[in-house]
Image (cartoon, rainbow, N blue to C red; front, side):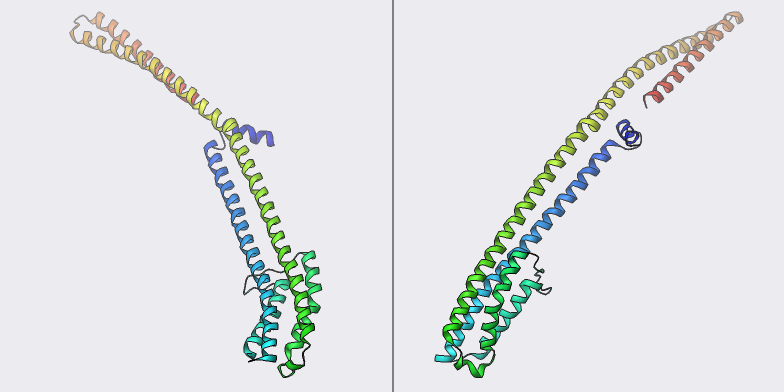
Length: 272
């Protein structure tokens, strides 16, 4: 079955080779562009995730700073609550995903293990600062220690996100390179096995048609010239027997001319 299809493609009877080339180029272009767009989307997603994870460190430090200010200076409860809310929500979004911000659900087991290790330190920070009426009773030394541990694990998570992003980019680059090489091979195969033979065949057919046309045209002109000469002689010839002879010659030329015409049509059909 496949051999029959290949023979038909090579013969050009069921499928135009030029259309095959154009179709292949269009398909390959669409595939390559799709992969590029997917790669760009992944890079944007990874950049967003790394940026959000990096802000977690700033938020934990902001909470400790606000607690110290509440203990020894002017307290901004609204800023403290906002930092706590963002820290908690962002931590959840980095693991479970968030459709509003465009963060996808985490699918890396190693990073998830770090988030699990991070959770006790995060819980202490949020639970100890949740009741604003008891801020003065918070163990600042432990809060600072838990915040430092949170920072260390969060730094590791950010680095893991960065490493995972770089690995994704390398993998996509390899896929794009392989696809580019595959596309080049396909185009070369089509040029050598489909396009070039078609071009050569057309050139040969064109040359043969020129030769046929040249020979047939000369034969056609020769018979037409003879017919005109016989017609001219018939006009001035007086003897009936001579006229009949001329008419027989004229009919022979017409038969020969008809044969030339038929041969020309047959040659054209054969070349087509």
